[in-house]
Image (cartoon, rainbow, N blue to C red):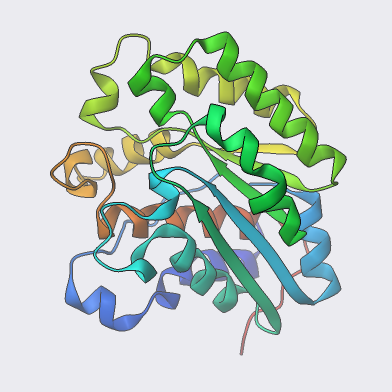
Amino acid sequence: MTGRRVLLALGLAAALPRASRAASAESCPVLPQPALRASSFAAAVARGGEVKVVAFGSSSTAGAGASLPWRAYPARLQSLLREALPGHAVTVMNRGAGGEDAVQMIGRIDRDVLSESPDLVIWQLGANAALRGLDPQTFRRLLLEGLARFRQARVDVVLMDNQRAPRIAARPGHGVYDAILAEAAATQPGVALFRRGALMDALAAKGVAPDSLLVSDGLHHNDRGYACVSEALARGLVEGLPSGTLRLRR
C-alpha cells in the first residue's frame, strides 16, 4: 500500500458527520481491510465526475436499527467516499428492502438497480435465507442468476455476507449461505466479497463485543455497527483502486 493510500484509509473515519460521532460512541478501531477490487468502479473514479453506487439488499441495507436514515450504512458510505474522492460526485443509492432475500431481490434487479446505470453494486443477502432456512441450492441458483445479469450490464458487484448476530447463529446450517457467497466471489468474474462476519470477529478481538454493534433484537446493527461496516467498506474500496487513481486532498 502506498503512503497516500495509507493516509486515505486511516483518514476515512473523519468523514463521518462530526455531530454523530460526538453524540455516541460510534468510532471503530482501524483494522486492515482487504482490497475490494471492482474494475467498473475504478473506471468511473478514473474518469472523474459522477460515480454511482447502488446498495442492494434487505434490512441491513435499508437501515433497520439505525436511529436516523443517514446513520444507515449506504448514507455513511456516501459521505466517506465523497471525502476520499474529492472532485467526484459520489452517490450511494439505498435500495434495501426489509425482509427480503434472493427470492424477492431477483425480481428487483432491473427496476431498482440496473435502471440507475450504477458503476458498482453492493449486494447484501443471506440473512433472511438463513432465518427462513431457504434451500441452499435455490439460494446459489438465484445468486448466480443475479450476478450474471450484473455481469451482462458490465457492472461489478461487492457481495456482503452476514453479520454475527444471535438470531442468525441460532439457525442450523446458517454458515452455508456465507460459504456460497464466498464461493461466488472466488469463482465469478467481477465479484468481490466484503466479509462482514470476519469484520465483526476482528473487532471482537480488539475489544468491540458483537452485541455492542447490534440493537436489542439480536439481529440488526445499531448506529455503531453501521459506522463500522461503512468505514471498513470505504477502506476496502479505496484500497482496491489502482495505484495513482487517487489524489490526497490537501
